Length: 330
Ligand code: SF4
Image (cartoon, rainbow, N blue to C red; front, side, top):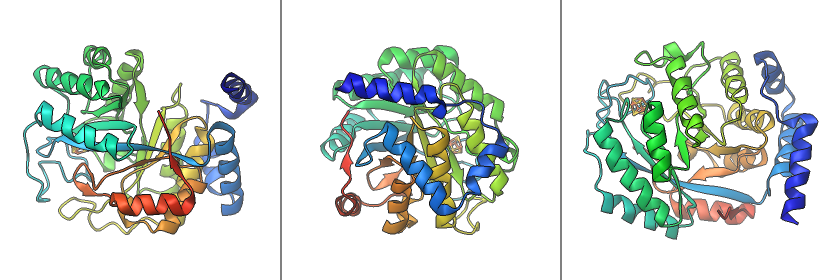
């Protein structure tokens, strides 16, 4: 039965759902569809590739908080901004494993470890590899986000058992320079290529609400959808406006615009997990429900997303029960 389902999915993909040649203009045309048409298309594709009643749950732990030398304008962990986030040392292995066990008990199937580095030093990577091995032994999928990687570092993480590496593009190539000046878009793409060549799944998305234009949003999605293969996970974040960061005074993201972005990501990357990520805390239950209807099928779960708040587990469980959604099994 499962083989038949996979065969049906693959033949559907051959029919042209899976493309890697999206132009910004085509993506902009999707954004401009009527809301109902856009959601219908997104939900129809979603049902072709996924069980619409399931949501994959990931938990994100900051294993090394603050003090980052980069200047990402949205980030409270940059040492350049006065946000009240204190620089901490890399967490100890046993503390990380305790958090991973607790995440598993709450229903998480994937455990993501985030470190506020420009790039990991080799001795730090030894420690992270130990964490990956330990989390993997608990029966969880493993994910890390550690900044830029060399090819060799990516291979070491793969050998330790890393399943996913998160490295976001954040924005369109054109808007990127307004947000980050300490590393280039090309360097991001290079890290993604190292991750891919090492055989690690890619988790890569962006942030909405940083002052970008509609055309920039189309540019971000087009860039992601032209990666071949598509990132297996596509986190779509709504900017969390943290006091002290340069983007603290940006207006909040319009909920309908956010849902549209989720839907366009689903249509252009139909087999990827589209993750409703940062910014959920500020979203109403109704907005989140529309995001699920638009094809989001993954969330971060737990009280904190690195250093910014996330809805508490009770609110998530209640919402999932109201919507009839179940955690996706591994
Ligand atoms: S987003 Fe990552 S790289 Fe950028 S400042 Fe924050 S921790 Fe550093």
